[in-house]
Length: 332
Image 1: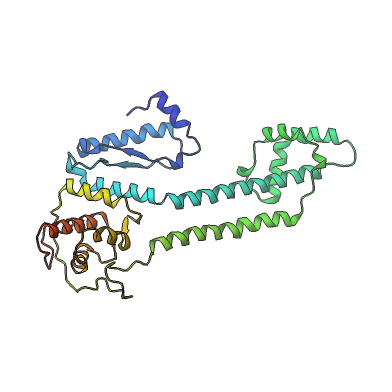
Image 2: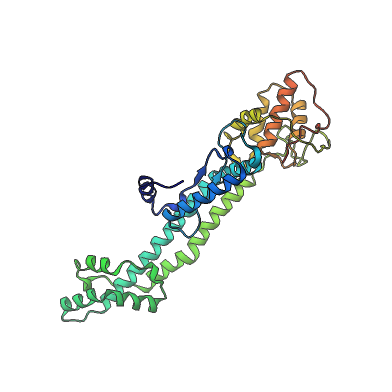
């Protein structure tokens, strides 16, 4: 797991974007739990030498294909890691919005600092000896930054490099810089203290609205009733699962092509897939009752697989049970 010099250069080319990188340890089902622990530790150690970030890079461990795991010792871990990765991908729109707001805040704070520096420099000039005064100010730019930071309570991290700033400002006649009005700084502070929090609230509200999409709990029953299932009050048994890994892989391909909310598909989307079977609403409603294990009106990957399995079961000429057999209920 040593990182070559070429790979190191490729990673370092992404400097400044390390928070956007996700690492996947694929084909983890090829080794046992003890070996996997060693490989995972070695990978984090190698990445830590290259990616200099306060937080350890997130590594997703699994075997990302539709075939059965070769070594099933960590099967539960692999499934959870897959789900975490999908949830991470799902959160990208919100993460992107938050990142844009953070970038806006950073630029706004820098604009404020530049304005305060320019106003301080301008105020240092008198009526005579302006060229000489400008040279003195350029040579003492670091001290001026500290003065501005103390006077206006601005962190030094928001200031530019003093030498680079001085090299740019020497091309301008600093005494001609327009004066800074107090209300202009107040306007910037207003944006940072009130405007930005409101933006973040809108991002959070949009996420909550997405998670609380108001689909009917059972998409085959649309009469405004919020009952978990309008067809009947059947009770579910507790059991283990009958669906093979290969069959689960086929169902997962359909499931993960849907727009998921917190790792689950809404009833409205699943209804469209179920209706393609050509079965009656009464049968489909009973299938939903049996498949929606937690009665939340959404379906996880395992509930969706059970749903499609029951549809295939009926289309093969079999009848639906009133209660799921012990080997039909998803293991989770």
